[in-house]
Each structure stands twice: as C-alpha cells, then as structure tokens.
Length: 139
Image 1 (cartoon, rainbow, N blue to C red):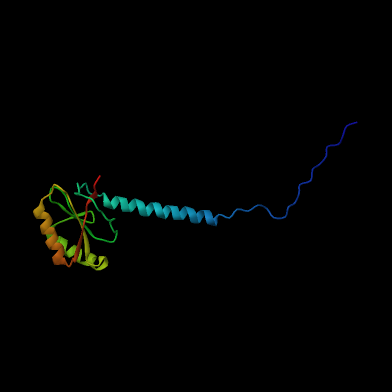
Image 2 (image 1 turned 120 degrees about the vertical axis):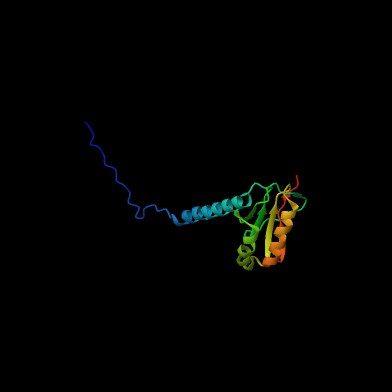
C-alpha cells in the first residue's frame, strides 16, 4: 500500500519579522559627517608645502582662524589662496571679526624673515590683536 503524501501546514505566526532601518541610517549618516569633517580639516592644514620650524610644545589649530602662510619664495597665502601684501589687509578685516582678532601665521623655516615681519605689520594694521604661530612638533 502506498501512502498518500502528507501536507504540512505552515504556521501562521501573525506578525512577520520586521527590521527597523532608522538606527542604521542614523549611524551611517553620523559616520559620513565625521569623515567629511576630518578630511577637510586635514587638507586645510597641509595645503601648502611649508617647512615649519619645530617647537617642543604645540597647540592644535583652531579651524575658525584665518591662516596667513608665507612660503620659502616669499609668496603670501590667505586660507590657501594666493594674495599680496597690499590686498591682505582688506581681505583680513572681515575675517578678524569672526576670529576675535586672532590670526594664524605659518611661515617657512627657510623663508625671508623680512617678509614675515612685513606680514605681521599688515596683520596688526588690519586689526589683528594676537598671532598664533604655526610650528610642527619636535621629534
């Protein structure tokens, strides 16, 4: 005698399994924001190939500061954009109100000392009250 095939009943559990994607999307967006912020800060600090002098004590750069850089050839840069001594004063004035009068100054170690002094004078005339000098940590 042959048996008739048996039919299995599927259990009806009522509620199906659900997965909430909202927490996962939140985590992914936070990671993206973190990587965008950290990648842009690193690019700003190393935008110009300057050989900064070494110092035994250093402080991290504040991203809100306007940064004036002087390379070895004496070229001036304000926040990575090339400028001149005559234009620097006018470009700095609106930036000084947001930074509280603090300006970052990064100058190449082998650059012209006279150029750096002239830049410091222009910063002072533009309303800069304090300078944050850029150095690299001693190794």
